[in-house]
Length: 295
Image (tube, rainbow, N blue to C red; front, top):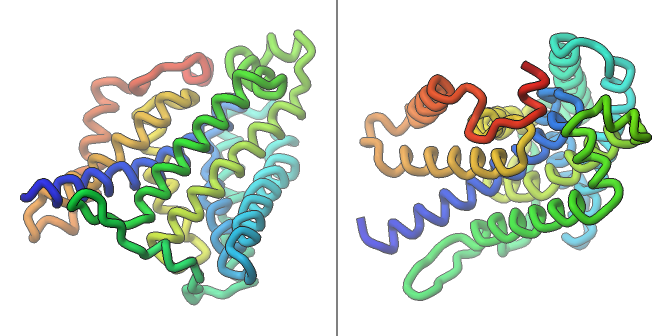
């Protein structure tokens, strides 16, 4: 393997890890506040993907539409499905998240049908970039750059704004935060809104890699993101980043190193490593108060 091929795989791993990290962060934000593993996140991805496919006009406008759709869908999800069940036990919330996922995906199926729908994207989503003898898709650089920008904005929001500090307080001890005057409805709504906001750039990256969308388009990447956030540490933003990039690195490494006859079993090997990591450290790489409270 030449160094150009090696660096190409590194870029692929970082790009895929960035995608999983964004999804993992969106999952982790909600878990940190509500202790909810929201399996309806996949339907949120589908909503953003179909909004991108159905919108015409300048690409900047289409990006705004995806952002708005993802955030509004997340807020509606919280208000209609999860707010009435806020004091329910985790099992009830888990079943509710599955129900919301099925409901939203079937709603998309009724509106748009089951046939794959093409997504028109600017030419630079498939453009190759040459740098110092290394050639890689521009989309890889976009994915890495978007993740860095979103992470910096998230850190600034959580550490420098009153809303962000309220979310951090609720993630640490929700009961105490409420006693100190933090409004539960306000904090949970902001957490879900952040979840939708973080999912939107991940939708753009994912659509750039597939070019097509179907009603259950979000199931596979979100499943991988759930595995990533679990091995990283539920409720930890740092753990979500670590888990996302680790999952991306493992996926690309097995894709590159497995013999051709075993290439189709790549995901089997990846999830075997995930199980092994969880067997050694079931709480994840970074254990949080949110996870200890849930357990």
